[in-house]
Amino acid sequence: MKLIALSGSLRRASVNTLLLRAAAGLAPQGVSLDVRTLHGIPLYDGDVEAEQGIPAAVTTLREALRAADGVLIATPEYNNSIPGVLKNGLDWLSRPSGEGARLFGGKPVAVIGATPGGFGTVQAQDAMLSVLRAFGCDCWFGGRLMVSHAPAAFDADGRLVDDKLAAQLGGFVAGFAAHVQRGSR
Image (cartoon, rainbow, N blue to C red; front, side, top):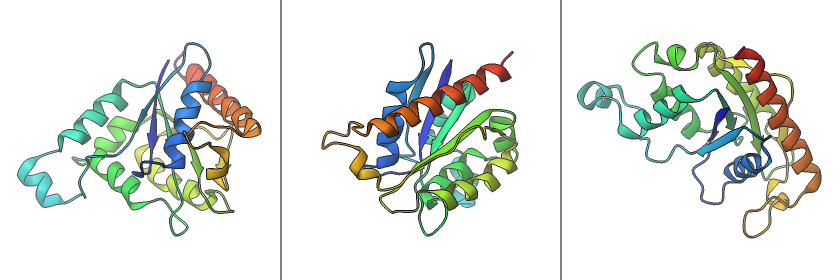
């Protein structure tokens, strides 16, 4: 089973990207998590789309998503919602009109998130539902993972050192993989 793990942050030391890398290492046997970011995707501009078409970075990500059995999105929480870079990337992936439903329609998707703050990513994950609903995703609600004070969970080399979080993350990935497997029968 091949899952795309999409980070909603561009930071080099993003705790969301680190969380996805840790998830890749905790995935059950037979499940691969291909960690991707939104680097190289410009701000959406309908004029650019009309004049130059879909950017290469969007096309590359779209092809990977199309080939994946499911998608795990890790979102930070900025101002009680999803970050602009994540929404922008999803907006580009939805172009031309209707492409979001063709790409994501019926595809299993799960959302996790990490933040340095104390409230996790509750509101960002809830805000993601509006976008995912518009795409017609098969959203997995069998688990919820919101990591507060996330930098403390990783060492200076970006390795997950919080055993409790590692167990939760491993269980989450296994649960999502089981959901994806059930849907592919």
